[in-house]
Length: 292
Image (tube, rainbow, N blue to C red; front, side, top):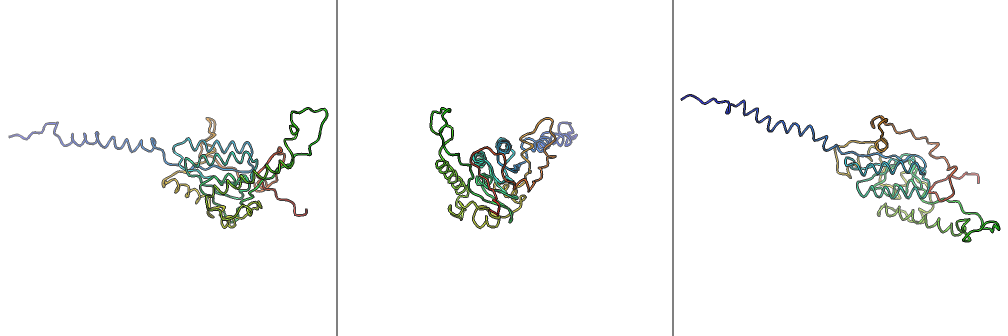
């Protein structure tokens, strides 16, 4: 009897069919998977210099981008700031708290996180610094209104309409702002704070080593280690680190994000006293002259 060698039963045909039906779709899937499911990312956002309208807008836009991008699994805040406006500091605190509700947020302090900058950092899951970083200044500085007087040619519907309130009333407002600051720090540290309110109300600046002893921070590590810690909190191992500023403000005319270089920190500008600020309350450290 002759052996059946019909083409339908040829081993070569079976191998080709196997490649076409199994291996080819598998290879295509392996090629497309990284594009369909992007690599997890840790986003880096930077606060440099004073907290005012522009720096607040820049940072809140970056955090909004992080919350909207499914690839970003954690955020690291790199802080170099002496603080600034009370209202804008509170805005940043609430925005960091909002971001923390969706992903881990780690704050790391380079040279300085004082006043409103530390207020913002208190909303993060964890705070880190360097041994000689400057941390703290938990308090408020404000300008008191002038003395109330009667202007015969000026008609107002209330006795303090032209002045905003009394001087003793402003003192009480400042005290309430300080207490809100302290409460935010205590809530943010969640039992890790070792200093009492009376001591923190002195509004001192501490080194990173002192801040660790007081429970104001969680450790003394580098920015790179803080990024690794954020990835650990997010439960990711194979991740990419991205700068959020160029991503949040990307335009068709701008270069690719990997060409972005964060501007260098000017230490002299960072420690400069506030100038040309409108009247109001500021979470800001001001170093007074020694020859008072």
